[in-house]
Amino acid sequence: MSPQHGDPIAAIVTAPGRGAVGIVRVSGPDLAPLIQRVCGRTLRARQATYLPFLDHAGVAIDHGLAIHFPAPNSYTGEDVFELQGHGGAVVLQLLLQRCLEAGADLRLRLAQPGEFTQRAFLNDKIDLAQAEAIADLIDASTEAAVRSANRSLSGAFSAEIHTTLAALTDARMLVEATLDFPEEEIDILQKADLRGRLTAIAGTLVKIFQNARQGALLREGIKIVIAGQPNAGKSSLLNALAGAELAIVSPIAGTTRDKIQQTIQIEGVPVHVIDTAGLRDSTDAIEQLGVARAWAEIDTADAIVFLHDLSRLLAADSQSLHAQAETQTYLDADAALANAFQSRLKSKVAVIDVWNKSDTVVLEQRHLQPDGIRLSARTGQGLDQLRSALLEAVGWQPASEGSYMARERHLQALGRVSGHLDLALSQLEARPPALDLLAEELRLAQNALAEITGAFGADDLLGVIFSRFCIGK
Image 1 (cartoon, one colour):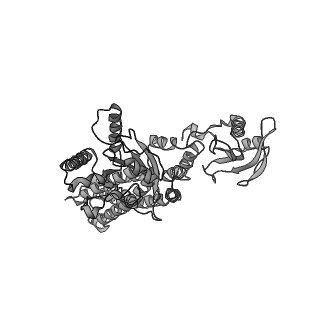
Image 2 (cartoon, helix red, strand yellow):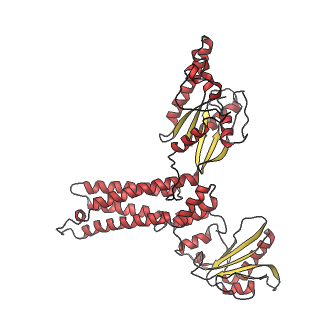
Image 3 (cartoon, helix red, strand yellow):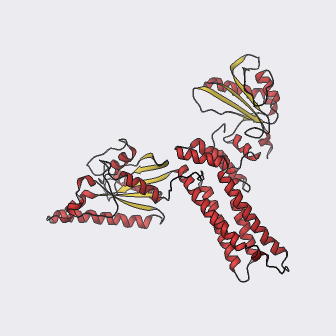
């Protein structure tokens, strides 16, 4: 650790604003002198003591609870000193300034964002995945996210990573031993069933990735864009999903000029629903800008709700040639949009066809059976089917007790591990086996897997992770 990491740090750890209780936390080596100056006495370890918090002249700033957690039995692994007083902004600032003043000779300074948790990681109180779970628990927006973050914090995710890492390390040792003793007559790798071991590790990684993917969805949420021609009912569908009148609804085509976003929950998963301007060619400069922004949102979506107007098909079997022509024009425009989606979107992005205004059409009488989900944003019929289809489109499965919170970097690391394992197996299958290349792929797989818990990782990665924490944590 750098000398700066050894300095004691202090911060207000409760949220800004007024409250019944506010907490100032200090962490660092040997805080006994600071405690004596602020409390006027020593404190029993891990025992809350009610007393006045004193300024430099011995006058009480506030009265509250003081607790001392001696190292290494503390959150950070260092001495931790907490003052729990009244939650006014001014009194907490006075307490913080008093601590900084009393600890000036100890080089006490303000903590950086995430520095308390970073010290817990550096002092081996938690690993990197658990540290990230703390931030995820704070930011969790659903009950399912809270439960998954708690499982990660308790070490469920880390335990699976450590077990897999141990198996991978054993496999690597076998290969290294074979390289060191090439004259050995016994085929060490075949006797130890290295192929079976690597195949089992690959299978375990698939299960870990599936659980991690579920956790990533809980943490990040799902971005759903409602797109389609003007007046298909996109704003009405947003309002129906949100259960509130968020967007203006009008029979005039082109009413929505800019995106409107609302986050809802479906089975505990945050779903960011975005209503966009109707997609059509227009000479109106404002509408053109709205259409451009709609396409920008579509390009970054996890799934697209392609909304069609079922009532536009009413003229399909009409005797009026004009009505039939209008219907065909609408269908041609829908087909053009479908082709545009196919050419612009990544293959993994699902496009869900949804036909709105089913309450205005009697399908059995008019033999209208278009593919996709039929619903009514006005009555709510079909909304449950759409909610289920949205979760299914992004690979969500009902949360189980084995799920845990994860991040995109975890998924990327697991993907690299799987890639290196595949290459390792291919080197093992070669005749003769390319043992040097096999050993290198196993080393790269081991390093990638160790990045998840921080057993191996660059300092810049740690800096990025902890800088996103709140101050005081």
